[in-house]
Image 1: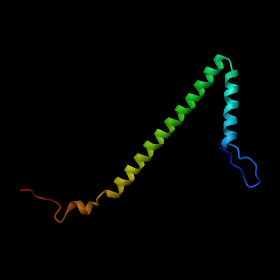
Image 2: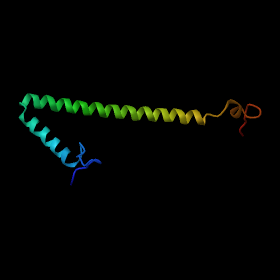
Image 3: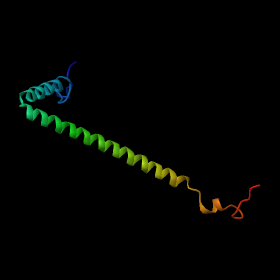
Image 4: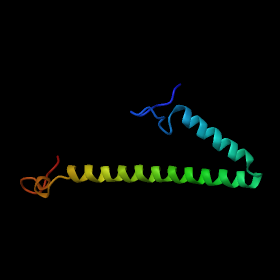
Length: 92
């Protein structure tokens, strides 16, 4: 798979081959770290990812609550419509 190029024919960062090269560079740098640094790096990455997940869940829940509130506000009947003609109803 060839990398993407811009109008002047230069490789676009983050495309195909460049992304693979960057990933290989990161793997090599990571493998050179001592065990303790590898462990702490992995923990930091996992915590960053957990923070992103929590942010996404909170955002989705907030959006759902906002949508529910808007929906309830639109569907509330007015006071005159619920009172009826005489204000009371009878059942038999």
